[in-house]
Image (cartoon, rainbow, N blue to C red):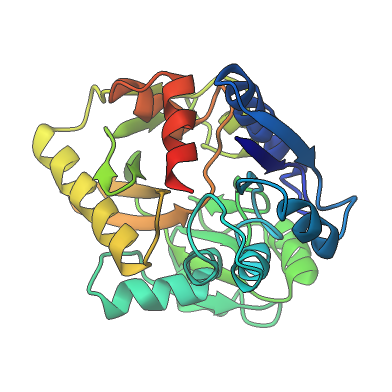
Length: 297
């Protein structure tokens, strides 16, 4: 089979995408496939579609804007090109955090209280009177995400980010344990417990520097909570009409309540990424996982 793997892209997550795409490309080669890698930052969508006509499908291993927002997926669908990953609509509905929050609420799925804020409204926002999280409405890998645990807070870096983004999403900070649950096909993968370095957050740096403990199976999460988390991940996967894969991040508060934070439609696929780690615990080697991916196209 001959596949096209898209890498890099236009988002701030360009380098992470290249690492994920490189890992997928190597596995496809080792599985006996031929692969052409393309970077949408350097080639137009029309050119990608033209090259795709002679392929068996596309792996859009692109994180963030231009990869998980559904724009490229919509072009693939219009051109009837098979591709890996959730549909254009699913990507759009999970990438835009406001749409995603409203969708969760419409399905009765638990998520922290939230609102959108601007430079003008941040400091008067009721949610900013208690510990909170401020993050872009669209984006990933914790870029421009601020976790404010102590009040009063220094507004300067947050206002700087708001000036860049225009408006951002604010949500109540859930104090407790952080977990993530992947879904492969229609099966929830084992839960991963995420423990950042002491006195640190699971931010962009700690996602990729190896300092965060990512425990699969978890050491501090009860079996009951793990089962509930897996069920919630499947609920989100179904509610957003995801296909092939997704990964949902959650927080567990001190009384055992689970809150859905975010869902990724093209989760990281590097050697340090969470989805492959959960798949490995479920019995998939890396090459077996990518072979499974290829059968989904």
